[in-house]
Length: 620
View (cartoon, rainbow, N blue to C red):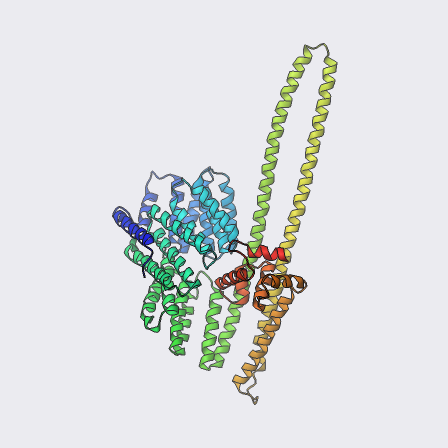
């Protein structure tokens, strides 16, 4: 099955365009280094080059990227305009997120926004807002992210910044993916592709192919009977792989290529007969090759996981176990920690060991699963605390800036008033010198001054009252955030205590002298734990039973079609948890949470543009 004619002709045109310009292009990094070494290169240009080099090297050499960004910041500190420092700090935001250091990422963003106020350069302003929106997107704050990304696009208009525009369109398309809004996803994927052509950059064209392929793939997953969509997705993914191979010397970012290869392999695994296994293995090998060269550990683990699934299909449990252990060994000692991914791998190993009948190994893997899950949970708690604190500080600074701006405007008006008053006084004095009614005029002038002082006093009183109201508002916001954190800590501690009890029960209750077999004892303990987990989940849901009318109204809205799990999702959303937080607590993928939100909106009769969180808050 082929792509639609219009899209296919556009793709062919783009390949021809890149072929014509291939001889005129230099390898990107070599050309940047050449510009950097030239004596005539200005400091401002050096900062931009170093930021681009940091972006180009982050997959293969993250420490080198940090050195280049720091050097850009050092050069930028010698310049008066805030453009260079804003660009350097915005680049550090991306690097710190890749390193999973949210605290420094938010600090870098605050610095970028501060220096952005000291420049009128639209490209620098757009780049800072782009990174700010991207950081919100990473934290599942999609509405805020969309607003900021669109604001960045406004800054980039007419600035010959198609490379940044193409990347932003890619993120907007991904936001509307997973069935959220297929029409908008297609729209932004097309814009991503068109701006990539305009930029004449191989990496951006590769990114556009991946974005278009993902659009087809998401639409296919909504209706798996439309095989033409799957064929179009695979064809577009293969275009990406072909381009990466043909333009290997000019490619810098290989994460999208690895993702395209892995998505292709997964498609063959899930939606094709077993006879297509060789095709799946071929693309797994491509993804693994890229992941090992560029430190894409998440992709590498997924590749080992897919091969392990094939081994399980064959009934070869030993091979499946060995593949997962090999994948874990590959990420040991890595710069980027992935406790949640490791926990899922250990959970898979425990399932394999249980199928093999190796209860001791299953217990060992289960303990490792709990340990890494606890690490992931603790890491998420810390990240949430950092994020909330950073957002609070950011909002506080915005309020301070707004207040200072208001004060500046007031000062300007006051200065104008003083100037006018002074001129009036001089004119009055001249008039009084030639006037026969000097005393009368002096009295009138004195009364005018008294009235002016009274007005100034009233203005000062109003300012003081405004400051008091602002302080009260800040205290209310701080209290609300503290209460939310306390709720999350309470829920998390309960869950950790339950899991620790499971380990103690298993270690303490297995009796080698019992008349029951080891298998029967473990099954009894597991059944007890399942019952405890069920009670725990009911206890978490009862946390919201103080408002039973809310759930009754919710069921009425859905014509009593909501399940117990649906009500649990609604409870978490009413609590204010993000998709990522819900996924961690339920042990599922974030995209599953997004699909559940989509089904909930259907049951509740909400439109695609309606905000589910806002609906629940209003209903409650």
